[in-house]
Length: 281
Image (cartoon, rainbow, N blue to C red):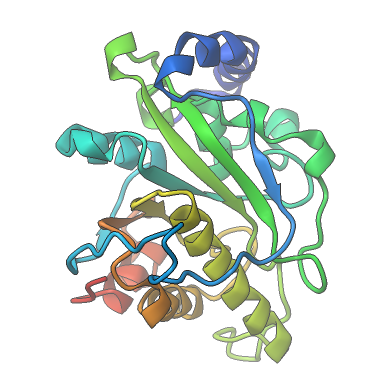
């Protein structure tokens, strides 16, 4: 259970106030308060391009785990120290303002959870916001190359980690379609263009990671919470695009960290587990 709102407010302020010093402390390990706003779709990956060679990883099973995203990232590095510097975490982001309503409401959804536990917030520059959610300019996002995880997750009161357990990851900040019009059965978008934009946003996530040498991905149920996107549709698109020939061999490990309570088979975790059953990438 997360700390109460008063405690979360103290944690949030402390995390933001200390983030520049934390980054400076780990600069030699790749920590950075910098970020890049990606305004348009990135070029398709090209295994024959000598500037970005395909690592050629053997197929591996995609994992669906009930976990906080940053905890999942820390566990990847703990189990494979060679992953250090090569782990990218998807931020299920707001495209309206940095971390959405975090500082106003002390919310605890995925983007805000990342901000309580790391230096992510100071990389989300106000000048980037807002950008379009749909239509021209919506296939955009932020690449934060050196985010320091220095707290545990909300269920563990965001306790500060020992300095030897701090980890540095990159973060991919991309927003799903927000509260789109759906078909009467709520299983699809009513506008075909919305599906096209979702597909391009997903490709941007994978390309942003691959172009920056991030071979281990921690992903999530993109847009399946407050943004109201149909979970099975999103899971299917994230699967099918990851299996496109363009992305074969680029990623060593892909984990979907979907923090959810058991829900009789109808929750995001169970849906993603079903859609990705037996899938290798």
